[in-house]
Amino acid sequence: MSIPSSGAISLSQISTDNSDGYGLGYSLSAYRGAIYENTTNFTGSTSSGSTTITSVSSTAGLSVGQVIAGPGIVTGTTITVVGSGTLSISAAATATATGVYIEAASTTGVFPTSNISFANFYNKRRVDSGSTSFPSAGSGSYLIPPYRTMTITILAGGGQGGGGGGASDSAYCGGGGGGNGADGGSSTFNNGTGAYGLTALAGGGGAGGGGGSTSGTPQPKGAKGTDYGGSNWGGGGGGQAGVTGTGGVGGDGGGGQTKTITVTNPTLGGTGPTAGTSVVYTVGAGGSGAGGGGTGYKYNGIAGCGGNGGFGATGSAGSSGSLFISWT
Image 1 (spheres, helix red, strand yellow):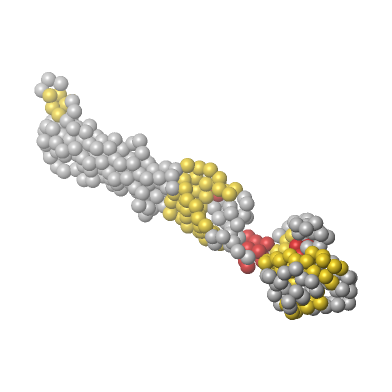
Image 2 (cartoon, helix red, strand yellow):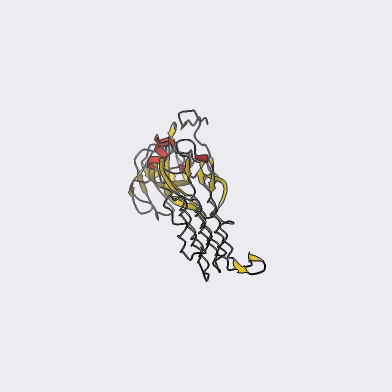
């Protein structure tokens, strides 16, 4: 067998395995280019030049039109009449034999004997549909299954919310601002390269809320992180309430970007990955580990501004990205 660059398989020889369970030198499985089902075995007697098989052991499972095979029976012969203990066949036997094993079956299809086109296989033969998902951060390789069309969707990690500002507990000491949230991680398929490569950009971390003002002026909410529309962003931390001024709420993180592509199997003229190959992927993590709340300060007549006047809340972490693949 050879596989040329054209994608067709050429069979140099059809299987000659004649084993049918009876140890005989014939079998429908050896008939060139045919696919069979409902195989029935029985014994009978043939006579050279006759189209009648006599002494049939059982006609159960036999019907007109079935292909029949046995000693002295011409290839491609079919049953034309099912009688009581006898069969009429479409071609005369070429040998006389008594009580020999004979096989009959229904033809269900034709199997090509050379130049089997994979394009024909993928386009007209059954390919099971399916899907798989990678819902958590990580990286690895994915083995491409047989498919006709495949849809690949990736989502990048969301950004963490910014920390809330600290409180101001006196007219002398302003609160500290909250920290900025961490950015999420980007997601990729096939390193973002080639006809089916994808790169989804990560959501940005939200800005920290301002510290409580000594004047008591309310602090605005921090700015939202760079947003690509995903719903996996983390919320900003709350500002700490103080006697003189309350810290501002941290900005929300930005949502990760979603990218989708639908490709066709290259054997059908498409630009998708070849079945059986491994494609690398990365699923970005959600932003975390930053976005701390600002420290609140209060006034001490001896030490000045110091001590804990109330911390702002830490921003919530963003959620991880994901990878989803489906095919038909």
